[in-house]
Length: 370
Image 1 (cartoon, helix red, strand yellow):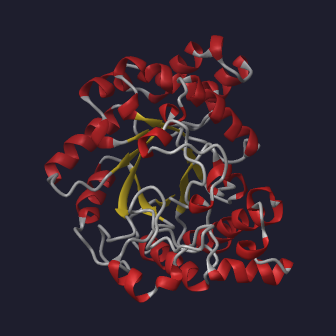
Image 2 (tube, one colour):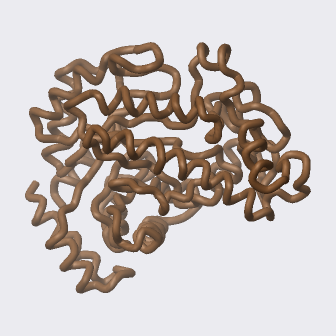
């Protein structure tokens, strides 16, 4: 596929429906350097030939960068990490990416930690909900939602150590942060029936983080213990902002400098409903953002992709690239072209696809022929 032809055709096709200036849309896509990404889980059952075949197909169809999940808060898929290695998928996939001229970005979970050795030895590292319950014993929604405390100095050191172990892999191009947030205080409306809950407001069992460290830090700053002194935490703007700032501080003051020390790119998968996860990502000093615009999670049509791509570009003032994230299991091959165009109409710098294993031959054919 010829990238320039692909970009021109898509830009021209979206002029009629673009929310941005249509002429700006065409000119931007003809002159800007775009990048298309795909997330990939570390399927340990795939052989080197399997990976080469799948990644060759991705390259052929216009993918520029692979985001391989090699740290998931329980174990690693590379040597030299802080947790036990399950399988060294990285050493298998990285040379293949290099041979195909595909960028390799190390996808890591940031805040959740399900490692038994951490849970047993450092229970004080975990966040607490608004009932005072720790995440490692009372995780919200699903068992793996064992989120760490963003304020705890040793937690910040631990997460920095995870980034350090990745950026020391000289051949990688960047680190990709996932779950760099707090648990969802309000789930996307399309997901609430799955858990048989109705969240018409913020409820304490889903509201994080009231860990002793966060409470102490906030009390030192304001004289208020948020767990004991606030009757309506959701309406207390200073407490709300404190928790957003705790995540922003981790990113900007700890993780970004560590990546840049080794001259690596650093990106993140982020939520469109950022308020619900205390994820004020438009303040982060990253090289790119991949908002997960999974429209069906929000009971919306594909126009959700355009709307929230545009909002992301506007919040970032056009200074940092936005790569619209598409959830392939909910997008048929027939609708894939429309979904890609929706992101371009919002002013993105490319598209990211979730994920490699979900792409069918029909999806690839659509990409190849655009």
